Length: 169
Image (cartoon, one colour):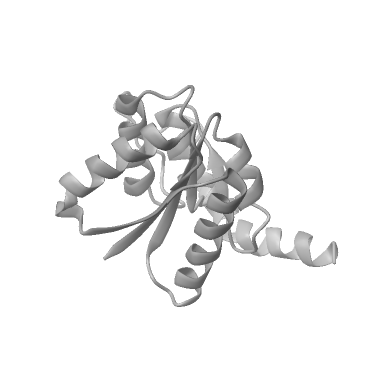
């Protein structure tokens, strides 16, 4: 079962609730939705990032979704946690690329800029898209820029990132 951890501040609460309702009503995909509620965005980000990291360390399939006014504040805080790749996205294409290219494990959306309808589409895209797979699109099956070279780069990108981070310590 895929665990989906949700958290928000007051500016993202309506969007979070809309996506939560959608995920719970379309649970044929076997989602377990864990809602950490609404609080100051620092706490929401920290809670979701900490709990997601624990689940990933136990090799559980899990993702996070954070919501604030722009999506940027919650993303900045969540990315301070080791093992977390939070992506602020403003459209479905960016969401799919965040998963396909960056293996984002937390989707961050802005309640002031994202409609519930678009947010639901982006949440679906986030959960459907796989890492090192061409970003899916209703317009084209595979983007023209996607190639074997891109896939080969992505397959080693996590090790490369780990090396850069280790060198910074």
